[in-house]
Image 1 (cartoon, helix red, strand yellow):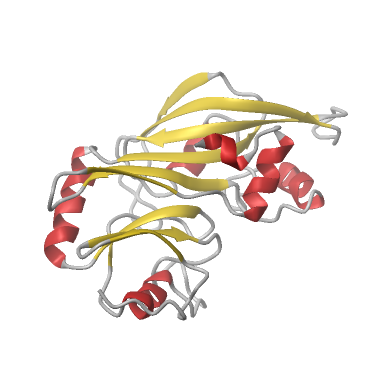
Image 2 (tube, rainbow, N blue to C red; image 1 turned 120 degrees about the horizontal axis):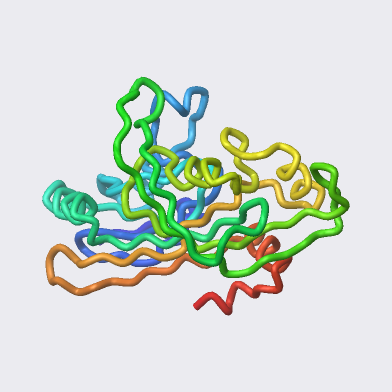
Length: 241
């Protein structure tokens, strides 16, 4: 496989072989052109095409503001096989998220979601959350002198449009930095701390390689800004494994 390491060095390749790759998508970069990315001129698929020197097929979606593991295939057969794993829910996706409030230690949101703009039909959607840490910051909010936040591991079992973000809103534990479904007052608190991104990171991806059956586990380290948020909880990125 030809690789041009001088092209788009900001895109970290976490795994690559003849058939597929997992890359660390930066926050703020859209995966591909769509009705939600009007006015954008830079897309991840174009950068990956230049980097690998071949066509790429994203196997799943990540929102523009989300960072972390994105799985792509290099041919239609591999893309179809990965799509089948995603449909059968044998792909395990683990996200890190920062939310407002202190949610339960372990909880599941089972709440149907539509498919986004122009797709009004609601379909089943489930996300399981585990609270990893909490913090109380000396910043006023909602009539209180302090603000409470939770660090979560999110494990969606379905793949609906903006599922984790919308499920956290449904649970009244809005995702920090989410300008569409979040809480502006708490987003401002984090901007005052120098954290300007949405705090959702696709941390780990597990799937079976379509061609040899190996179970692959790929991890994307949090970026500098997300790591800054982790340290508010007393969590060092290296401790996440």
